Length: 183
Image 1 (cartoon, rainbow, N blue to C red):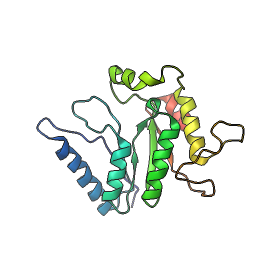
Image 2 (image 1 turned 135 degrees about the vertical axis):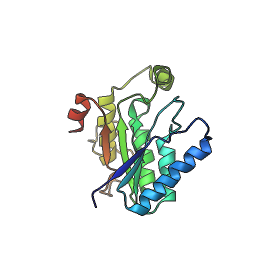
Image 3 (image 1 turned 45 degrees about the horizontal axis):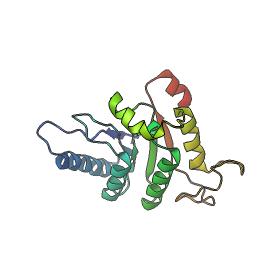
């Protein structure tokens, strides 16, 4: 079978409740699992009237508990809003809890309108890492690839240094710059 995946933004229609929209996402993931799809990715979007998928980390873990074989992950976490250590800790722990079925895709876009982006960045105004710096740190934390002089050396997540597997990391994007960086 050709590998086929689903990207779900957890849409909500005008007459639907949040619970109903989440139930649809769960049912779609379960159907994809039964039909042999490769992966199911959930998005991060903020303050949109027709999308309620704001936390791919929480939804990923819930969907992992509702499926058996399907790889599930973010499509994607908007890395500019978070420190890479927090993201990799979450995804390493989910990967350990799910028998290694987690994928991590990160996005460069803000995942919402400028007002939301400003609010999510409020606490980061003192020292702001560029997306490129965050993406490099995230990948190095994922593989625990730091020399002993790095401030990140020796940090522990659910993946320990003796364990060789890491969470697959993907970069999402629609620009030529993203394509080049992903390559």
